[in-house]
Image (cartoon, rainbow, N blue to C red; front, side, top):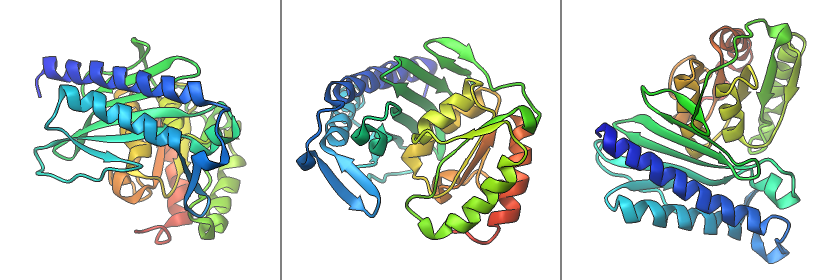
Length: 272
């Protein structure tokens, strides 16, 4: 895809994310019990997730009718390797949203030939739009961003997410948490992986680890991190995080330290 079309994709993704964000914010605090359904144990979906997804798909399809979609709530489209496919989380942080906890986001990644070439993460409450195009850098509201230069663990703020879909892994997770917590400034659990990854790209945190995520949680944020000068891998140190859902990320120094702990604790435990 040439530069002009990539920029058109970015404009379209940003517009779609903002439209979805409007729906999310207008419905914050207005859910009834009938608006919330259980997908699986401890994992929920709301009508707002579905409305947000619908407006995103409609906006993209009007501009790029041949593009495919992989979304959290409805579409799992497959096509040839040369296809362009959008990987979308219309409301990342649904549990936060249900409870009125003000951290959630919209995440859109564009995949081509097995690579994420464009990513947008939008925080509608703070009007923060993070974006990246492969090879062009990462940006927050059109200002270039980069990962933190803090390389010492004791001065680092680390983000994480609990394995709420795989609670049987809590013992291994807590073992890693304990090892990491003993050596860092502090740890945060925001409840939106897309926000966590965007914050690493913006230098607000130094590192992140979580397991059993979905591709739509990771796609856009992974490109933000790499384009901001950071490192993101799976728990084996490779690039299969969209498939495994297991993520270690950070600036170069902190990623290496986190990965060393994660490899010791999780080796052979979380393979899918």
